[in-house]
Image (cartoon, rainbow, N blue to C red; front, side, top):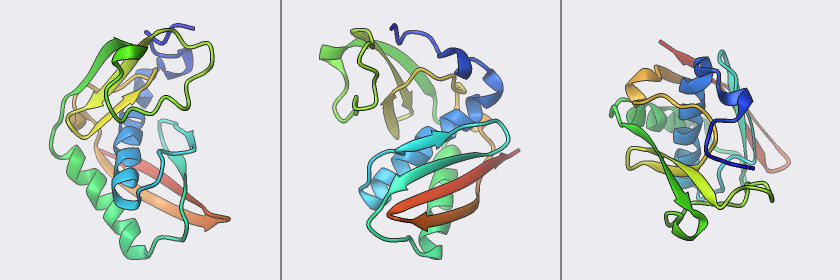
Length: 154
């Protein structure tokens, strides 16, 4: 399987802002909580959700901090770039754990400025200024899983 073009279900550019903000949210969670990127994500144009494994529920203040951090990154108007690398030249820190077994030796790497670098096959905006405002609309914590539901406002 070639990871050189966006997956068919992610070629719809109407979800590019939401897909790009998922990268920012994932990196924010990694930095704030030291957790892995989302273990499960459902990305849609109007609202989306991501699940994170955490040892305990975050406080309401931490939830607000997540939202503020993501919006701070968006406001920096960072370029979103794509590059292709061989598996031998994957940038340090890029987790390949979610790649399918039949992924090609050439990988598509998406960078959100200097904030996040990730192997990804989805469509993205060209600059974080195209995303809008990130809002966490609800969250739950059950059995060690934090589920964040969010939307974007223009």
